[in-house]
Length: 219
Ligand code: DX5
Ligand code: ZN
Image (cartoon, rainbow, N blue to C red; front, top):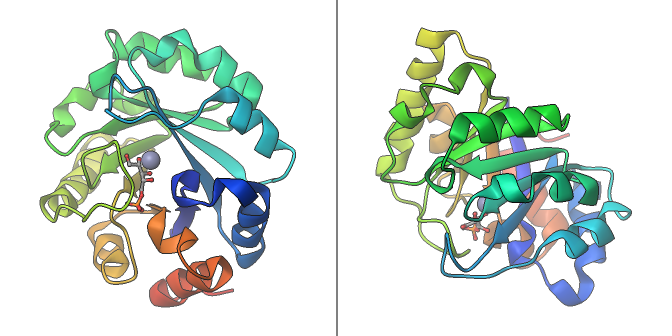
C-alpha cells in the first residue's frame, strides 16, 4: 500500500482551499493536518476553526496529527471540526490507553505517534487497538527538516512488531519525506507518507504525481 498525505503546514495559507483542491485532484489520498500547541512542541500552528473551514472544501480523509499535551482534552472538538482520524503522541498522554479508547468511542480512526527517540515498546498496551502508528522521521515541531535515517530502521522493526502481534495498524511516516528518499522508506515497510514541503513548494499537482510515479502507482 502507498498513500500520500500532503501536510498543509507547508501550504500557502492565503490560498489554502485552492491548494488542497490541487492536491486532491492530483490524487492525494489523505490530508495531513498538523496541530501544534507551543507546549508539546515549540511551535504553534492552528486549531479547530481552520479544520472546520477546510472541511467543506474537501472530501479527502482528514488525518489530524495532534502535537499537543494531553490531547484527550480536545478529542471531541477535533472530531466535531471534521477529523476522520486522530493521531496522538505517546509522549503527550498521561494515560495512553484511555486516550486511545476515547478516540475510538468518538467513532474515528485512531493513531499513535512516536518521536525519533521513543521506543516501539511504548505501544505494547495499545497496539492491538490501533488503526495507525506514525513513526516520526524528524523531531516533531517544524516542517522542512531533514529525515533522520535511523528512523527508517524503526519502520522495519515496526513491521516485525506488527507481525509478531498480528496487529492491524498501518505504518505512517512524517518528516523530511521527498522524492529522494520515499522509495527506500516505502521498501522499509511504510505505507502512508506525509509530505509537506515536497508537495506544497512548487507545482502542487506535479509534485503529487511525481511521488506516485516514483513508487509506481501513478493513476
Ligand atoms: C512535523 C510535522 C510534519 C511536517 C512535515 O512536526 O508533523 O507533518 O509538516 O513537513 P515536511 O514534509 O516539510 O518535513
Ligand atoms: Zn505531521
